[in-house]
Length: 289
Ligand code: C2E
Ligand code: MG
Ligand code: MG
Ligand code: MG
Image (cartoon, rainbow, N blue to C red; front, top):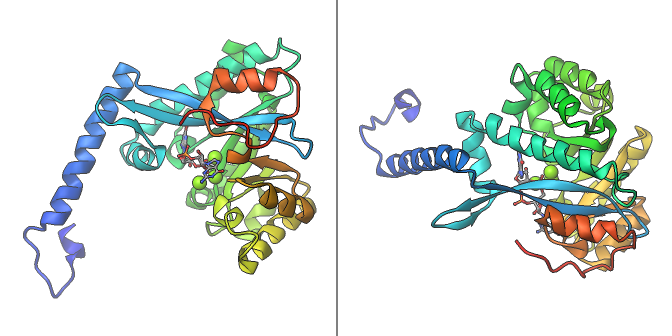
């Protein structure tokens, strides 16, 4: 906005800003098209316990752009959030989750797995979120206790009372909540104890150098201890090596997600891996994406 250009500068035209605005507008147009043409695909990454057995999976959105190939959610989710397109896009991910969970409940090898879905602030604040999700569970027959919603600290700050209210209503349907990217936001510990959470996710930025950086190790340890104190599950994301896993296990973290156990892959790939009922061999998962 021109007002923000500052008192000392009068900017009539900023080519860099102009380019950024154009690019964003282009992406927005393409996202609308993508929704219409159904170019989004939901991929999936396994989560395992300390015996390397699958306990769940996280759904991760992918966009098959007709010219650019796979576009990462890191690029398009922020624009989808700003434009509100995240509401219909996110709804598709929830539909996929419920459809799968409804199938899995009939399969002894898959019925205990949870499915985690990332939910953005805009989606969660949307007035009909709770009612639509409740309707989706009912329509598909998906078991609420197998569904986990991943939320972030920053989205809670915007309207904590409304967020807690939504969470409590969804908890009554059995739905769980994981706090994603934990430690990277601004959570107040006072808020944390009020939230009806089931899981903390140690952010991958702390896992990456957990063996070499004493600060990261201290933060990881703090998150694990906090989870135990608050009686929450804790899972580490971005686990790539056996040594990271061993270190985290030593801290008391018993659930893991990361390339060590497989890259995000199609849901069918993950179903096949988990469906064997066997422990996963670490670093065996050289799947796609
Ligand atoms: P996130 O929820 O924290 O997801 C974890 C990210 O870490 C994923 O990136 C995953 O592919 C990546 N990852 C997993 N294991 C490893 C590993 O061992 N090493 C490394 N370096 N990375 C690993 P991805 O798929 O690019 O997603 C990025 C973010 O986009 C997600 O972060 C999430 O915030 C957002 N996102 C993805 N799908 C959705 C969605 O359906 N809805 C919303 N609202 N956001 C989504
Ligand atoms: Mg996540
Ligand atoms: Mg995360
Ligand atoms: Mg992240």
